[in-house]
Amino acid sequence: MLALERGVFVRLASFLILILLAWPADSSRHPHKPIQSHKASQPEPLKLTPKLSFQITLHAFLFWASIGFLMPVGIIIIRMSNRVECGKRLKVLFYSHVIVQMIAVLLATAGAVLSIMNFQNSFNNIHQRTGLALYSMIWIQPLIGFLRPHRGVKVRSIWYFVHWLLGTGIPILGIINIYIGLHTYHERTSRSVRLWTLLFTAEVVIIAIIYLFQDRWDYLMKQGVILGDEQIRPTDHITSPSTSQKE
Image (cartoon, rainbow, N blue to C red; front, side, top):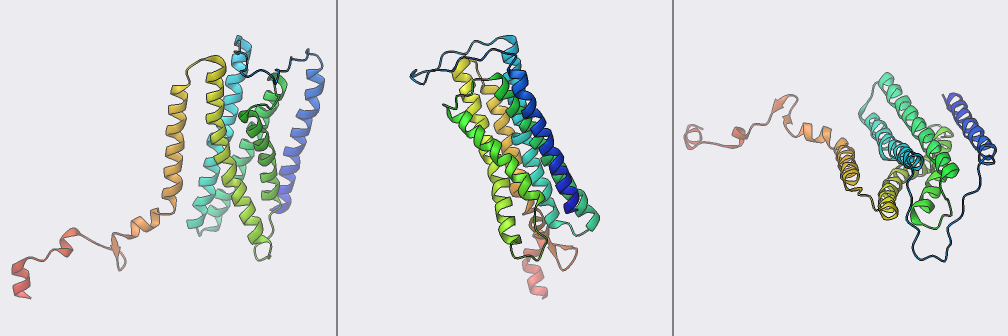
């Protein structure tokens, strides 16, 4: 299984290298875009052309699909395996987690390449700096995941902590950066993003509820059970005076 996962990672890394090698050749055919002056206190209003508007929309969609949706879903999938004892179901959940996360990494990579090729990247704002940190973490995480040690090895605990920390931190930081991106888009274009902010917030709340509810589901189901399948009923705790007299 480990050899298979390493092979998949090598293919993903090769795909990224090919994209990055193709980018300089493509960008050399286009004139360089002027870099914004750092002396300006406020950035110039962004003039949206149909092409630029499409590129921004595609960039936002790729990162929402990757960090704002697929990565949290991948976390929920792997957490489901904590209550599964069947070996086949464990394999299905594990490989579903791997596939979902790999798709998320590819989508994030496509969004990063799109921003490098088409946007001004002076990294003078929080959104771009946070995005750069996310790009690095997104590719470190699958490398750590594919090189995991076998169970029983001493470093397994350290590996699990680092993998869990990055796996949880990337979606949280990514969700924050999506909000920052929406705010930046509103400031640069003066266009309303209230609807998208509300929809994204509703999705985040639903995912958070599912995440928090997962570990408590079995516990909640056991609250109504005593000695096997005998259920607790409210009337079991109410004793009428006539019943007390008979007893």
